[in-house]
Amino acid sequence: MITSQARQQRRPGVATTYVPGDRGLLERLLPSVDHLEVTPDTFAFEHSGQGRLRLDALHELRDVASDATLIVHGVGLSIGSYDGWSADYLHCLDQLMATVDVAWHSEHLGYTKVHGEFLGTMLPLPRTHEALELVAERVTAVQERYDVPFLLENVVRMLPDHDSDYTEAAFLNELTSATGCGLLLDVYNLECDQANNGFRIDEFLDELDLSAVREIHVAGGVKHRGVMLDVHSRPLKESTLSLAREVAGRAQHVETVTYELLGEAVPVLGPEVIASELARVRAVLESWPAASTQAAR
Image 1 (cartoon, rainbow, N blue to C red):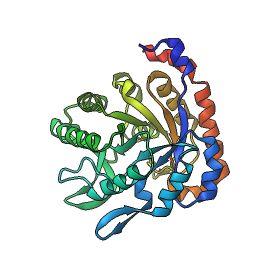
Image 2: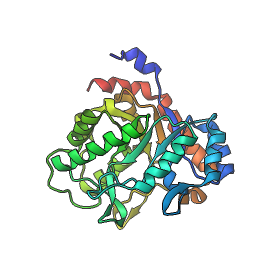
Image 3: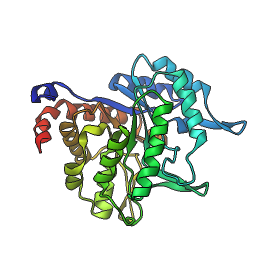
Image 4: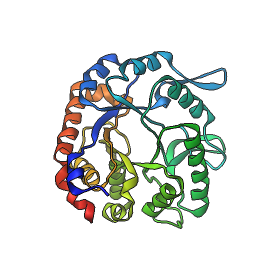
């Protein structure tokens, strides 16, 4: 059991998204982070019918691995597609894992393909017994393939909810209990669901087994025609930082809070704004022990 005093002494680290090929940005941000989150999809290409990673990016990551702990966050696995996930993504992940040391890796709990056709977006799984069984088998296969912890991330709901056997939190609790995988909790995604669908974040957090949460994502996005979009391209709102602080205070095993960015957002924000946002995240986490009393809720 973790005592209140021990929890108050432990603080999560700070991370941000790795943008391949921008050495100047990397050198500016490395002093501000403890972890660097790598998305293999952003520097992948097809070679001889198989997914491969750019060697220049792999060499760059190997060069900076002593300056920040590397973690991996995938987009393209499509772990929830009923007709199979992406073998190309796994080949890319094999290459990355063989080149650099990785503390853990994560993927979205959703699907991007149906009948092999790309949807152009990502959709969450229906919370049914059948979907739970399917994804649990695949999580187990991923864990057997790579000898590092595996996390799954909550994704934004863009369509009306499917008939469900579980609440959002209960589905995640069943999955983590059955497989031993961890969770990456994207609190900005929760805010999108709250704004768009009336999602009750407080009820979700009270029901969720927060001991499974190892990483938190924070991001800033945009509204389009009244819809809050999962487009990580803006500075952080105070509400997002506050929610991250609450989760970090209530969860026992959070190791880092990641300011997540799309590569396309970097020229818009610029290195100095991104660095200042990372400083905001760290400042919030420095004050986080006051939130640890909420762990008893």
